View 1 (cartoon, rainbow, N blue to C red):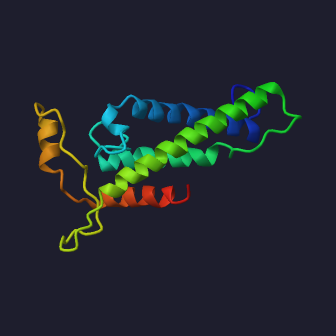
View 2: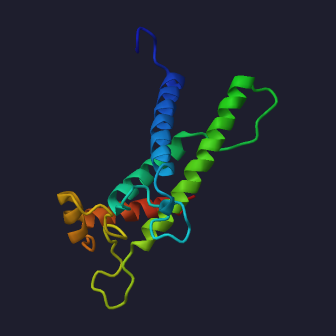
View 3: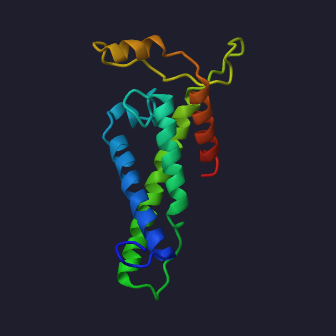
Length: 170
């Protein structure tokens, strides 16, 4: 029971879907508010889901977007018997799904650029922490980030690989 009412499958599905929509909108809005460099195809940060292009956080957000796609109903033609409110909701879900898929593909492309591919590099196949240094140089956080830019960490590699594998299903 929830708030004195029985909580059935439809109520649970509706609650989970609404929560996913809120989280997805936050991730998408954060991405859309990033600098122009994240949206220009020829930029090194194209598709990164964070300001500095961190692999770990981009992979985490990408995995969240891809998980949400499993919650949203797939796009399908609308029947003539559906009520107007259901039709509007279905359209909104289809548009949200399309935005998520488009941005998820971009993020997957970005993460793929972080892979070490040079034949003689002993870290070949792994993923770098980010593609470029932080623009702000005045903080200790930025200094540490820049010092460890080419660092390869197994937790980052695992998250990036998991996210990339999931993007192959799009």
